[in-house]
Structure formats: C-alpha cells, structure tokens
Image 1: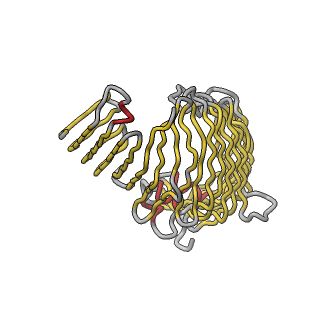
Image 2 (image 1 turned 90 degrees about the vertical axis):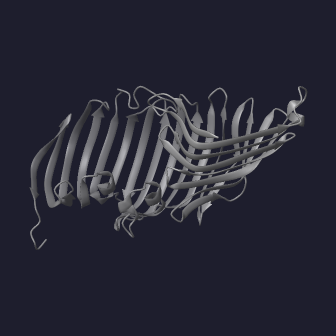
Image 3 (image 1 turned 180 degrees about the horizontal axis):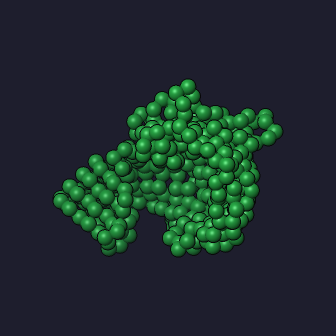
Length: 363
C-alpha cells in the first residue's frame, strides 16, 4: 500500500495517492531466467498526476509465463476520458512483441476503439507499429511506421470520413457541445512523417467537406502542408462549394517553424517568412470559438494581405475590408457592428474609415 508518492521537481513530476502494488514471482533461476520465470504484477491508483495530466481509478495488470504474457489497463484521464486496453506480449528472438487485442477511448457516449489487433514490435533497431486501425462508426484512423533507436522516424497515417462534430468532444468547449452550436462536416487526411526526432519532415494533405461552425456554412477546404528544414510550405483554399472556381479564402506561402519532437528554444525562428492571405468574402464566424471575448461573431472579410519580415518582426502590406461584422463583446455583454477598412503597413495594421456602432432595435 502506498498512501502518497512523489517523484519529480517543482514544475513537473509523478504524484500517486491511494495506490496499491502487488508483485509475485516463481521459478526464479540464475540461468535462462526469462524462459523459466512466471510472474504477476497488479497495480491500482486512486488519484495520480503525471506532469499536467491527472489519472484516477486506474487498474492495471501484467502476467508473464515463460516468454509469453498478457496485460490490461483501465483508468480515467483528466477526469473525462475513459481509457482501457488489453493484449498479449511475447519474447521472440531479438524482438519483443506487444499486440493490443482491445483499445478504447471514450467519454460522454462518444468513443473510438480498435477494429483489429494493434501489432507493435520492439527490438534493437527501435519501435515499429505493424498495423493499427481505430474506428468510430464509419470514421477510421489507421497508421503504420517505425522509430529507430537512432532517432529516425518513418510513419504514415490516414484519417477517413472523420465527422468534425467529434472536435466538439475533443476540445471540451461547453459552448460547442450544445446542439448545432459546434463544428460539422467531414474530413479526410493523409500524413507522412519522416526524417528524425530532431529534424522531422512532414507532408500533410487534408480535405474538409460541407464544413460548418455554429450552423454557419463554410464549405470545402483543401489544405496542403510540406515541412522540412524548419520551414513549412502552406497552401490552403476554402470554397463555399467544391464546384466554385473562386475560393472565399486562400492562404499560401512559406513560414519558418521548428517542429522538432523535443524542447526547442524558439518554435518560430527569426527567419524570413512569405505568407499571403486573400479573401473574397470569407465568413468570420469560424473565428468565434477561438476568440474568447467575442460571442456570436459573424460578418464578411475581404482582404489581400502579404506578410513578410520574420515571425518576431512581421511586415504587412495590402488591404483589409470588414463588412457588417457583428459580435457581442463578452466583458460588457454589448453587441457591436463593425464596418470599414484596415490598412496593413510595415509592422502595424492601421484603422482606416472604420465605424463601430451598436445595432438599433430594428437590426
């Protein structure tokens, strides 16, 4: 029995409360130990903290008998996500085998689970995922790949027919969980990850269809991102309909960013950037969930903006026009209507012919 346990520093660490651990082992031998050993490990955690993640009601087991074993885990993450998995393990020549027969992540009636066993291998070369597919209704996520002990990585993943309403669940925003107040539509995506942990290369293609936010139609979005050598080449197009020849929003260019899978001093290096944002009447309601002080945001944005300079010292040029932009300013709960022009120039965006007013009782 472990009443309390802590390992770490002031900023991060592992804290366990009300925990129990049971270990039994038989057939111990100084020779061919793994071939003869039989063991069982059971552990439970009432409440735990792993850096910033909380765990509760955790139960895990591991049973081993002469080069073969089985394992289970169940618990609640961040007081919301119910996670459970179980599977088989074995020791083969120069390879450790871990196959998950079951995997489930769920909360509030929404969940994903594996379709077939998830096969993984660990050996001197590194860690490999042989086969992994998880599903929710008609949605699926599949991935395969490997990470070598040298840090080299090679993974591919495919997301098919993902219902964007699932974002309302993962983001855990109370406003988005209300009926027809969150995201809608479907998403297909393919990603290729290569290079190394310190210098990854990423190729992403994503297509969103019939996208909506708070019942506002966004349309079809196509995004392509290619990242290598600390630069991301971005090409995003949004159309009200896939048949439209002119997109309502276009974002393209080259942005310096360090996406290494480790701690870095600056995620956005002080290197030259070239980014263009062009809009022919894009509905601003898509920004409503990400601007906390503005509610019921909607209206049209027309712009042709070039962003140069560096991430720390951006240089703007072009034009921005706002038409009938309406919102409720949260701190005072007063509605406003904004119309007019903004003028990007240098490292500033100046107000030009801008009007802000409260709507009349008839509006």
